[in-house]
Amino acid sequence: MDINVVNSLTYEDFVQIFGSVVEKCPLISAAVWSRRPFRDLADIETHITEFIHNLPDSGKEGILRCHPDLAGRDLQSGTLTRESQEEQSQAGMDTLDSTEILHMYRLNAQYKERFGFPFVICARLNKKAEILHQLSERLTNDRAAERERAIEEVKKICSLRLRNIVRCDIQTKL
Ligand SMILES: NC(=O)NC1=NC(=O)NC1=O
Image 1 (cartoon, helix red, strand yellow):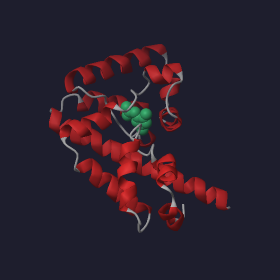
Image 2 (image 1 turned 45 degrees about the horizontal axis):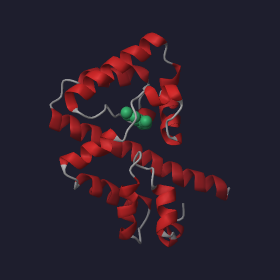
Image 3 (image 1 turned 60 degrees about the vertical axis):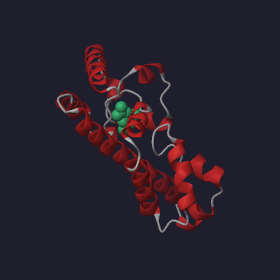
Image 4 (image 1 turned 135 degrees about the vertical axis):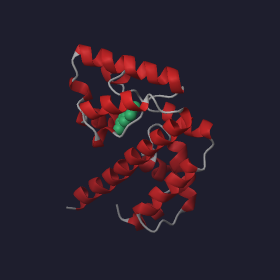
């Protein structure tokens, strides 16, 4: 998306377009809007990651809690956001058999019980086997380390969603 177009967006249009780059956290884009004009898309990403970085632990955990479980209730009931649906499908979460779904459900529940926030991973960069491996492995982290690790995954998801916005725009230009 042409950065001059982005910089000329009204607040409402900016949040409409960028509000879901962090799952169900339009507040972040609403806050970043006031940092315009942006040099480029990477500049928007920098402002978003700085906003997240400067949040207290409770704020970071709040962002994590806005993420739907992988292969969880929202996927099964078709109530995922468009972005999450695409990401989870790409990772093969929508083709698990009943045993795998139950296994994911149990590990997600165990993880949430231990940390108080859901397991978050950038689904577009991982397939089923790696997701299960990471979920089991990260369960042994301490809370502070795991919070930071999960926030790093949120930043990867955000980065890919930002580029998706740009790619769509290029397509409309072709
Ligand atoms: N709990 C999660 O990691 N959820 C997700 N990761 C993604 O990349 N998309 C999701 O919905």
